[in-house]
Image (cartoon, rainbow, N blue to C red; front, side):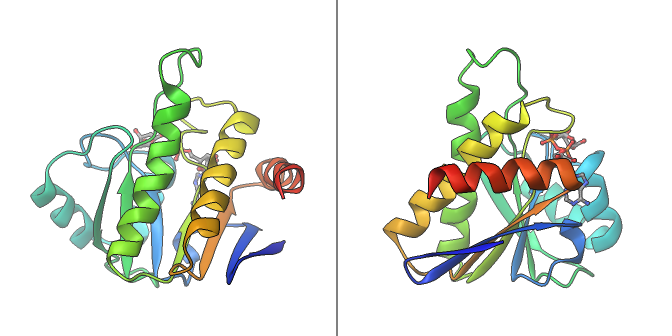
Length: 176
Ligand code: AR6
């Protein structure tokens, strides 16, 4: 589904983030930026060793922050690596840190003049964030960003599997 927010499009699709043709894709990385499983593993496998080389040069990334590399062999020109929070019980600043991961990724994209960006559902795999709560934060943060500024023309959420796609669709209908 697609919705218009000011001049921009917010889109939700079911699929694989590594196949996206947006200018940037976002990686749900860890602080070490040395790769891992899930989305992170898939991006490094599909993008090739150049991405890891650039990550090693950057060093580390704090939870809620974002850094950028080129996209290696991916269709996307850039990968924005952000680190979502590990979910414990929701009382350890997880909502704010997850919001920051989205905000800082969008801010970094804006600062590079990137017009289209694809996100996975950050923190909802290995990091255990409950999907509905994470979807609300992901969507609210993106919608607010697009309401405030119109330099990013497309924000696409790429949900892995039917269930995640349905949860995000339901949530977006509640929010707009
Ligand atoms: N495209 C889109 N979404 C995907 C893909 C894909 N190819 N593969 C998995 N997902 P996760 P996290 C979904 O675990 O929870 C890594 O080891 C998946 O179904 O990738 O932020 C890092 O190195 C889930 O909904 O990221 C970190 O150590 C969502 O992407 C840690 O995992 C996020 O799952 C980060 O954990």
